[in-house]
Amino acid sequence: MHLTLRQLQMIVAIADRRSLSRAAQAMNVAQPSLTRSLREAEAGLGVKLFERTPRGMAPTIFGEVLVRHGKAVDAELRGATDEIQALNRGGAGRVAIGVTLLGTAALVPRAIAAFSVKWPTVTVQLIHARDNADAATRLLSGDLDLAVRPSPEHGPEEGLIEDYLFTSQLGVWARGNHPLFRRGAVALQDLLDFGWVLPVKSVAPRRQLDNVFRQRGLIPPRAMVETASLEAIRALLLQTDWLTLLPDFVFRDEGVSEPIKPLPVALPGAQRPIGVSRRASGTLSPAARALLMHIKQAAASFA
Image (cartoon, rainbow, N blue to C red):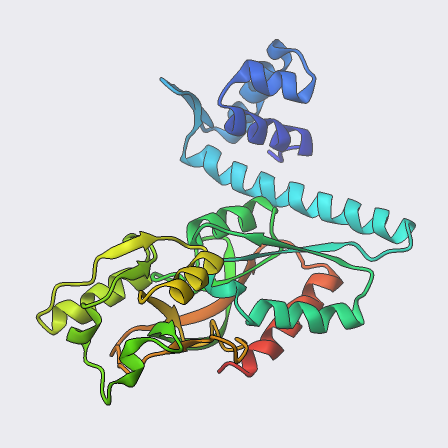
């Protein structure tokens, strides 16, 4: 049996709303008609696509497969529609790129600036993703065309392709006139005399930092503030003696006035590969392919 586009849309609608009645309302069809269509799909495939739970209709493992593919198909259709409408208006469409804290700094703006010179009629949507999982979800749903982020620790997620860009070294950063810069040498122990601004404990860089201290028999630093906002980190460092953990390229384009600088202290093993991800299914628009090329060119200067 081959599912129709309408059936795929129905399955996605039920999964998103966890309710037959709400899905029927969203698709502007009668609930009995939607129920009948779902039963026909399940009968044709020979599997159960949804099960009832206390929180509503939840897709089974078979349903999850169709939801994923259904969202990818919908993303392709939306992309084609957007391109046609943009061409009809005399433009060239839009590209959505997701970034995490690591991806926002220097690299992506540099790539977008170069891209916009050659594609001036394309609108670039720059979207902040909370973390790798959020970026992956947005890619698979079609909300993003590309995502620049730290490479997932266990390899690319199912349905995604990742191109390696470069490996960054995590380091300890402080404002340029921080007291530690007046010392001849800085040891890990010295870093514990100051407050820290850090990412939450669940992310890989934080775990890497904690491991470095534990391997030296030291208690990991306690965060005064936990945040993923680069703007907040910069402001806090410039106003305090606090320290932070960031990749070596983040503040590369800082000006000479009160810069943020890396301290001369090694964090062995604290490295992160950086990559750019996209959906494995479907095709990138010409504009998205061009932006991908510019990202890779910008990354070459960071390697």
